[in-house]
Amino acid sequence: MYKQHTGIKVLLLSIMACTSAITCAGSSGQVVHMLHSWKQAVEIFERHEPGTLVLLDVDHTLIIQDYCDAFALGKYAWPQWLHEHIVATYPVLADPNAWEQFYSVIWKQAPRFLTEPEVIDVINKAHDCGHVVLALTFIESGSYGIIDSMPQWRYEMLTDMGIKFSTMIPDMVLDKLPSHRDLHPVVHQGIICCNWCAKGTVLQELLRIVDYTPKHIIFIDDDPRNLHTVGQACAVLNIPCTLYHYNNPVFEKPAVDLHDFMYKVAYVLETGKYPVKAE
Image 1 (spheres, rainbow, N blue to C red):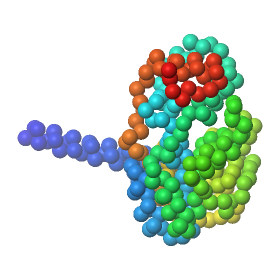
Image 2 (cartoon, helix red, strand yellow; image 1 turned 180 degrees about the vertical axis):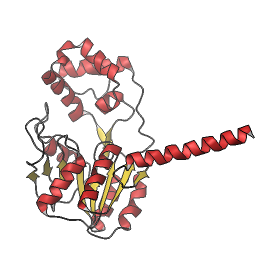
Image 3 (tube, one colour; image 1 turned 180 degrees about the horizontal axis):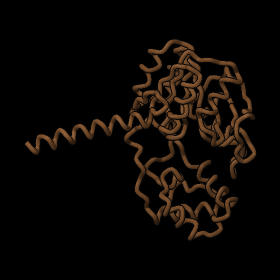
Image 4 (tube, rainbow, N blue to C red; image 1 turned 60 degrees about the horizontal axis):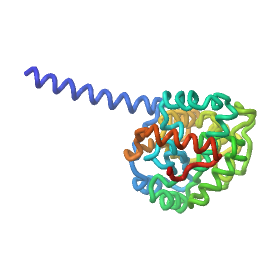
């Protein structure tokens, strides 16, 4: 009897934990659905009527660096102790300008790939269904180290990979929003660059400026915090939305090979180039 009660208790706790996770991710009042593969997204776009606004996160949703290489993934995969070890080994990197120059080489030159081969076909399907497809990314709206323009660099990268967005919304600066590094969020070639401002806040301001009320909003992102802020914005604007947490189980943080990692750090500092292949 004790074992039976214990089993029931464990089951109830598991159900409560799952419910709590959904409530946390969708605490804006919107349900957050899990998306483990882009193949699942085709039917999502097919069942919504034309005129739906599709918003897609970029990093770790549409594209990713080499997910087997912690160095390539950048700060996303670096534990705090590793960052401290880098600075302790190379004190020059304690200078924010030196760090930006160093990190921008990694950010710009690390090879990137589609998260899944189906990404292109799925985005094209969304276009074919008559939806408006835009990127909604956290990146900065100006220069960063060796990158002259983050929005243009991102646009060229995605275009070269075959990813295209709708251009019905003209390029613009959202200058009523908070600034970061003296710059504001921007729209560039269908890519909304939030410049470290909350995605929901940027979306709400953009729709206000262009006087655009979509029939429905679909948003796909790998970070539940972004889903939360967009869900909040949709609730305020009274726009129906469907939120998807892209969580491909393949992309787990890799183990850090410290010797290989520090070799690559030294290589970037000495050459100003990304080490495509360690010797």
